[in-house]
Length: 398
Image (tube, rainbow, N blue to C red; front, side, top):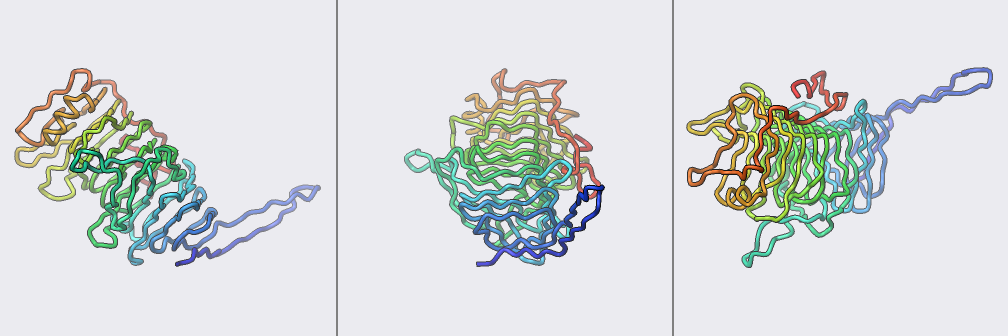
């Protein structure tokens, strides 16, 4: 087992006479060090600059704290750099708007490391057995082959506030499995996710694999697959203020699926802005994965106060739309069944409102479940150092 290494480069203190009563002041220089190996005991990394080396696993019954203002840098030459919070482990990554906790990569090339992966034991539905009963566990698609899913709806993986992940989405271990900026496997509702940024990754910005966790104030910027993605019956109920800006290459703004299971529950997200920059194409040339929102395999949910802009791609007879229903089962079970609600959507430009993945069916939302608005505002986020990368304001086009 690897040991956690922390090398202090400089810890300097000085004392200054402040007044006649000989008060003293102390200044501490931020540390420089390394984060590596299994975290087997609760540990705090004070504000500093750290190198991430290899696979870091936060083990069960352990909390890893990294203080606000810290910068953690992965290096593609290391092989596989990734942070994995195992079920039962916790993180306390609590930054501030002025001093976020930043995970980046030395070469600043997307797909250079594995991002942050959290596992829990909250409920999932990953399919159906032959007798129709739900499958409630699954094996992760990140190359680690970790089993996730359980019955603990209030699983608590800790807190992430004002955290930014840059240049993630690496293929790891088996050479084909891709990581996202943030991957949440069966994460529960007591986990706190607020003011988080996924920046220029080579897969999805955020992906939820079942679970009950909710997330507030998210930015997915320049990720080459989907900005937001979920499956396995994710059912977070208190999600709000999600912003996607797709530039250069990107697939769906939101890709929504449920493994072909017609669940009675669904997630809710309010205050959403999905913007696609001019000349942005899908990740793979010739692909038709370029809609703002796609529902497939019984994906569902309630989404409100939405602004969509810039989705104008077309390939042959397929043109980007605001909302695409990909298959007939999703149309029957979720649209007609009243479990997809798109409320107060504003579509800028000429993007068509809805589309289908096949000519074998047509989409007809119940009137109350697809409503348009000229005054929808979308996400509301406050600028700061947390939303600025190398001088670029990620919220400039919000």
